[in-house]
Image (cartoon, rainbow, N blue to C red; front, top):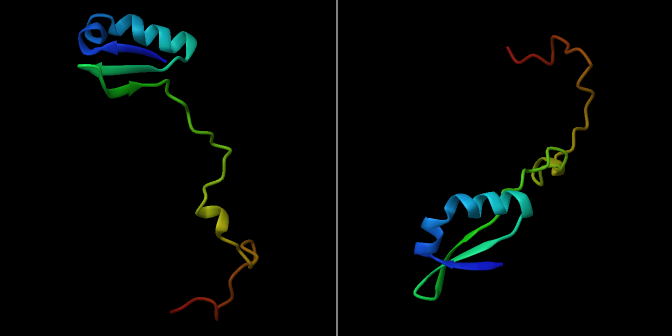
Length: 74
């Protein structure tokens, strides 16, 4: 992790972003030596990872079975 002060970050932002894009490195931005922000590479969410809430739902009926007249609430 590289550390920059705010002035260095403003001056070199384009090159910092290009470096993050190429290497995936993380940058820490400090004001008066105290950390205030972190620039990290963006990670796309996996569409194949199941949703934690939806994975708990269990369907116990046959959804392809046609409904009868009694099933319809009129």
